[in-house]
Length: 609
Image (tube, rainbow, N blue to C red; front, side, top):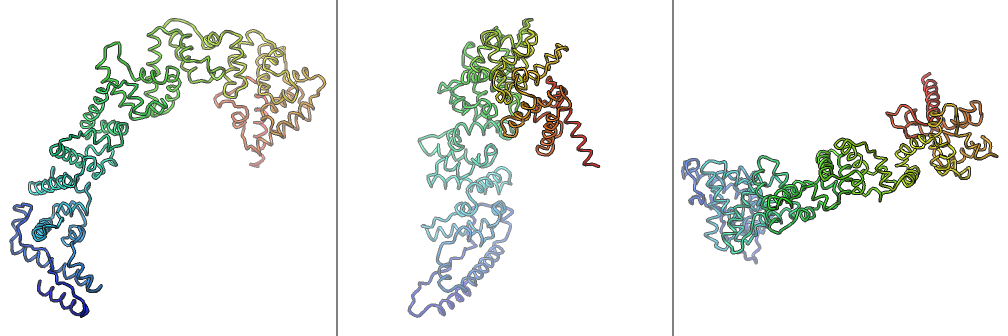
């Protein structure tokens, strides 16, 4: 059959090559099939008779050769000559032996021995050839896939397959070493970085360790696994995260714990403080983010190892480390915020409790904690600061532990420098949308207790101005609220917002005030609140006032058709009344909201009918 193939080829070449062309004849080096295997096998493969294997191999190779020649003949003599003469690619070799589709199947196939024999014979005939079995498999399937599959066979296959896998494993390591691959090069070849924490449980990781051992045995300069992994995963910070996750998994916990200990021991040898490690792990920019960072666990473990080497008076804690970097006020503020996020809620609450107990153990007074939190520097924004919540928590703890009755307002008043200074803080807070409710909630009860008349409150809240400035002033609504509270305490008073406006602007009529207010709303100089409470105040005093009724209907139509607000929407979006609050301290607001509710219900009934 060999001669037949050669004859066909020769005839084709003779017919197609021009008379002037001279092409040297090349022997067709089809694989021999009768040489001993380079990979020792026993019963499963050796039981086949030599004659059977020769016949099968001869037929397979001749058929493959004929098929390939037939295909190439169609493309011309030059293609035939090229294919016969050149060294075959890995894909072509594996295809000839039908080993190209699945690596796991290829590694357990008897045909792998046939390929090995052919490559051995080829190397014998051509010493310059660099083709090898391990190189062929690697070129087609890749270093990482081959290494992992060989490791599985080494650990799980029967004796013969395990032996084959071990030989190929050794060949792979030797090939890397011969090509001067570093351990880091092999880490990258095995694509361990993309595996993240699961890399520690893969067969590829065992291969990396084997190669590290081989390199260290062959070269004077020794590398450590920790060095390779640190560089391979992108630095100590990223490796730290990988190890934190790996410690939580049963299959990687032991190895990850050992590597983490090695990493932290290295830092201890470098005399790094916990604060140094905090910065190294990139936990020093934002405490809330630091609490959600996986390397928080790395820092916690380091602190434990650090404390084991310190005197009792030098030990620290996670809270102490954060405090040393962020300051007590920064930690307190961040912990309140972090307590509201699911990922950090538990640890944040634990650290908040620890911080309060630490102050209590050191016998800090509530006034000292006010200073620690630097609330005075915040001015009126302290009223809504997260640090104020911390102060409130400590006041409650101190009152409970020491049987005291301190109040938040009392501590703030003392901290800000007395009654007058505190009132200035609260008055500033009245002008801020975010602090207004808190300031009003502390200021008005105090004024009512002192029986401060509405006229004085008018002045205190900065309303001694021109009419157009008063009607757009953010505290006009506050005056209306105080009037409601004052009238409730003094039922015979019956003072109203429109009455105070007419008193302060003697030569101005109700209609003039209403028209000015309407103009401000239309021009966008003020929101609907002041206009609404003004209409409410007029109609409660004069229900038949036509202009007030006209403006009321205009405003209600605006809410219904323009803003598309139902009564609850008006409560929440116009007047900022929380859903859980059924009534409002401001009688003007309460009255206008109820009036709109009736208007809205009538409109709904008309639509349905």
